[in-house]
Image 1 (cartoon, one colour):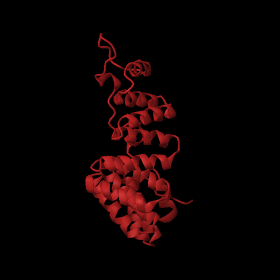
Image 2 (image 1 turned 90 degrees about the horizontal axis):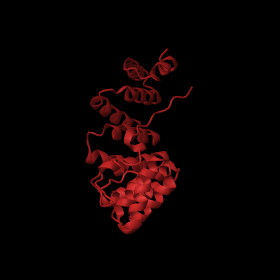
Image 3 (image 1 turned 30 degrees about the vertical axis):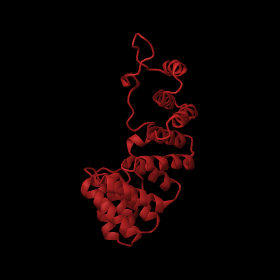
Image 4 (image 1 turned 120 degrees about the vertical axis):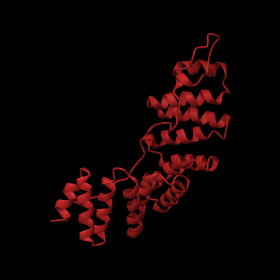
Length: 233
């Protein structure tokens, strides 16, 4: 059985918004009774009364995204961008919706604009890097993970994922260095030991590989036991 390396995606990378404010805390009102906006219907009414309010479109788009209406969300994010072309959050969240619709090219384009608008926000580069990897553009993925690490040196997932892109380009020594950083920084590096062990198998370092795989098993990483049986008899 062939074993493969596993990529880490931050938990917030699969949500519609990274720093999403709950609608009930937006402090947006639609009538004299100071009623908070909490539903799509509320925002429909608010937009009808004030069709040029960018925040209304963004907030309604997020609600639509959370309801899996990704096309509707994209339409609202697009309208927000038309009203305010520098709305980084709209590009970022629209990219997430495009990911849900398997539009990787469109998502990368939106993340690229977000990177230009907010070059100090490492999340923009992290999410784009993930898509570059998924579309087998490993060099660009590595470049973006480099940016993430420069902006946020403690982001161990960036080291982890950069290692996988390096391995895809057969830069095994570079990948081992990145996994070693993860092992040093991560409180639960079972997967990193596992991946590093598999790379050492590729390098014919059976002894080093088996040490890593045994450590991975000790740390309760579920795939390590099977790999040990295959490579370390």
